[in-house]
Length: 490
Image 1 (cartoon, one colour):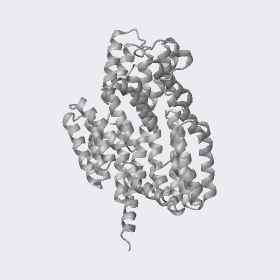
Image 2 (cartoon, helix red, strand yellow):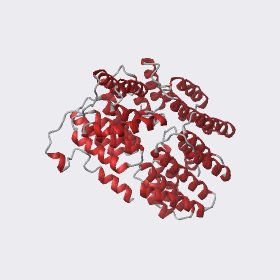
Image 3 (spheres, one colour):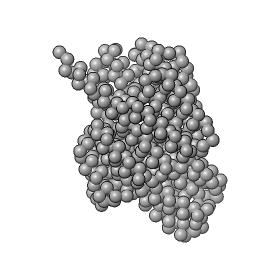
Image 4 (cartoon, one colour):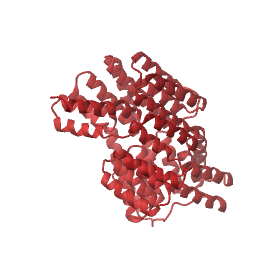
């Protein structure tokens, strides 16, 4: 279970040494085996270990629940607090525990301060200090197997797939049978398109924990990514048989949706909502269920379902999900004016007094600007679209968020494509070549400039994309049908 430019050069450079190349200040120190735990409570220490075991088993909601008990036993347990902030899906809880951990940072060990600086900085869109702290932490505790697991997990979430693979491969040279790292490494390989390596790592993971649900859940997700839907369903259902409360119904639902079995998918989404570990997860599953109506081409039901998700998120004070629901509508509705009104509703949600991390707010704003640029460019208003791209360029210059960088490149490529400048669009679209919207434009740009081998390669990649997102739903099925139709012409 994973669920779900110059700036880029600077970030890549910060990963070049990846922690285990020690700085001069730390090179003379003897390595410590594990990151220390600063707590006055023996019971809290024991329960912290229990929470970490839950996390390694991908029972995240249970891990967070135990960590909440830990900080009741020891309110000054800074490491437990920052992990709650890192793992919780409740924005108010994220903020409260992050701030408490930061206040306690002067009282804990230097290693724990690095952990707090990394995880707090990541939520505050302060990525360079966060990444530096993560690298220093990996260097200080090279024998602590959990740190590269946490780092690899975070890097995958930030779409830094190759860096995640590097971190996890290094960790597994020291701890070759560490199940949690094998799981993350398999995902890293899959996201890099290396499915043979992904399945080899997953086979090792399943062999280590055959009676746990997550190895089968993860195997199902990777099989689905590779288009092996029946085998994916078999793995997901095996996970459900092992533990009916684990939550693999969401994997079954996503797979059925990608297979075109939308009514069955909605039934599974309804089951998944029952087992969801948080209100945020429930609304996320509702959003995924709403996309099934898009796949069916039922515009009325799709718009109604997405509007319901937005209202539910609003009453739950989950601003990011409310904004995402309106952004999905902005991508979907045919009328540009209506699309722009949904984007304004998204902005309104982000500006209300609901708790939301700076990183989530900034990244959602970037996603909105990307949709705005794309819709305006499609409507022929390239001047206004270019203004949105300029705002994104400014954001990309100030943030090291990978998502913001990708939004800028995707939007710039879309506008240049609309302006009839495919050769200039290509360099931007290549930076965002995992997004279906950019992939479709890149295919057109390659085709229009005579780069036929590149066009064929991106067409193959796009037609094989099996991710349960609205972008995939809007682009891939139609693209596949067009390719089949084109191939059948005399």
